[in-house]
Image (cartoon, rainbow, N blue to C red):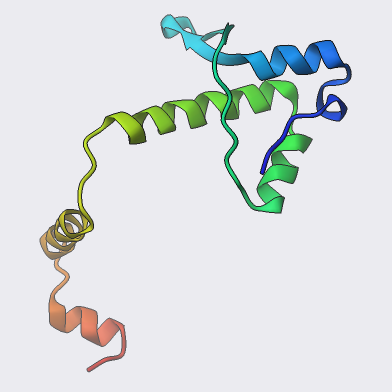
Length: 110
């Protein structure tokens, strides 16, 4: 789990500002700005947390932007069922020439 501490930001004032602000892209110019937003905690692997902590403040902000956009996409877009996703993958594979026989031979099941 990623938790921000004064070790990450140097002092308590910077830490509080980081916790209360999430950078976002403003318009097409890519200007970074900061606005007060709620904070969530998401459990992650130790290696991911270490890499995030080791990143520069600018890189951390970029990651926050990307994650925020992806979370927005995942939570606002209608969710498809697993069957729908598998059907779409199957149709795409068939359109590229993958047949059940070829798949079986690739998997060593023939």
